[in-house]
Length: 156
Image 1 (tube, rainbow, N blue to C red):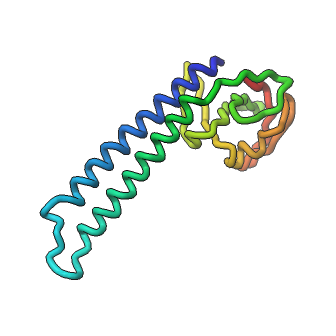
Image 2: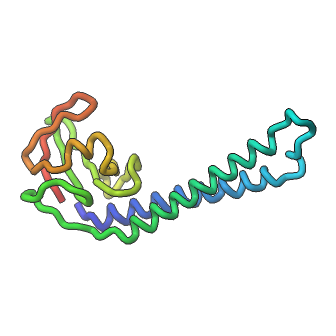
Image 3: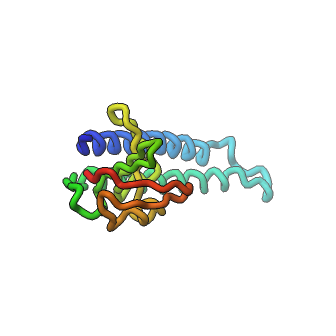
């Protein structure tokens, strides 16, 4: 598994999220400043609600910009099966029936990537699965929150 491909796919996914958030922020800003949304009486809160939405969308854009910068600056670390799992590791797990891939990243938690036919779940360091994996070695077993017992097959 090539981690630079995974890293590139994560950057691409974050860029897509950023573009979508940017469009949503623009739409919300237009709605907030639209003359049609001016209050007709003291109980008409449409303009206020649109302003709150525009602010929230703008905050989301800033969060995604920061995540994108962090991801682009993040070094691609090499791990081996002798290393303990830490931030930047790509981990392969198996329970005898299925293989699972997790990429520990400071940003992009919850994003699911499809890289060269493999499904890789990005998890942040505070995610329950990341907490279970951190500090473990190849060959260790962990019980995932779904109740399955998995062996750590590889650490990249």
